[in-house]
Image (cartoon, one colour):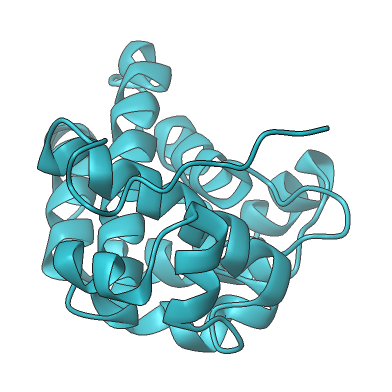
Length: 193
């Protein structure tokens, strides 16, 4: 005989706002990657988290607020890891750029039989949240100084804003149409700096 799962939505079983949000975000991720963002309802998320719809609305203003929070959390995590990953490539901007695109495009690939948050069946619903000022600022932190050094050393004038726009499109394109690392590298040779 299995014990019934206790609800935590009455406020007495969750110590703080952040803990409640994390539980709901984990439930939302499971729903979004299993059912897709569009097909998932607040009721689905509530059921996955074992709470009422009212509890979900206590923490979030709706599904778009949940999507935004999930994208923000994963984006921040990915950019922190990316910055560490390319730290030793600061003096080789072409290599840093290629590695950055590959890393972002292959970050947390979907599990077999499931979608991911930003591509496949979720691409249309997630895209408005991907192209944001926050993403652009994160790419600035990664690319600005190495590009400045590259431009100075090679007498170039590559524009950071244009480059970030291209990088974002390439990342999303490779997430939606995965390739092997070799295929990816061969394709990027065409646009080497």
